Length: 302
Image (cartoon, rainbow, N blue to C red; front, side, top):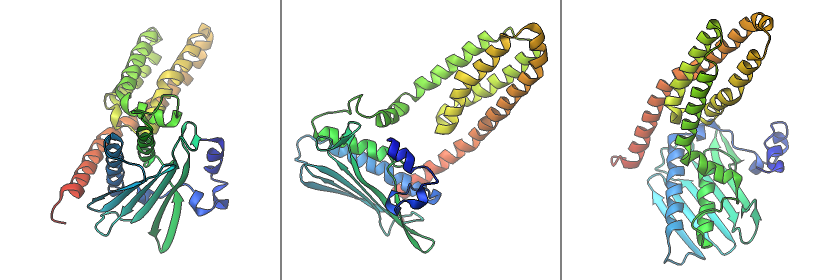
């Protein structure tokens, strides 16, 4: 995200922006039907990127799936994507999404084709709404696959590593999830060894924190992005900073600060405990989501 885009995402400036530049903030859009639309769009773009024999310039490709219509226009200078809910869509809010990017050989931004349009149109609460989805997390995979299609059209199979930190990071986060989990587990084991010789009171509380962290790391894939970031920050920075600083104190200072350190660890444990206790709920939510998507995709009675 450029400095200008970060500025436009500041809350204080958004009332002054035209509607098409205001970021999308509508939780009701983030439903199962929209997730299915995004997934099918990814597959559609991936299928187009894999074509080798069929001429693709100055062509329009359509894919109509129960509930929505997808359209990709490939031009020498631009790529244009449309995503429409149809009358058969089970979405609570019907929407139309338009994304247009320059081919990166024509006009690039951070090594990727510059985005010209990324708007969503929908009707809710008696109003027609226009918003921008360029940096909305739900639609980021669509941009990734659109740029990959551009790379394929240019004779490249993959996006170069240096072309886009944001896009590459998205791919890396998906593919390296097991590596990150292993890294954090190794970090936790190292902390357990490093602080094994603390006094009994602090060791006992730290053991509780460690147990809660292990529970979260066991099902790391069910955590959302913010929860993963918080656990990573706690493991890599906050716990070592707290306990290393405590260990550097003189014996009298340690005695004076012991209760404060214990309270800090207890707060961490309560925080991690809440995340751990939510995992059971997250598992059920994920299964229910998969079942709803399955029904929308394969139910022949509607």
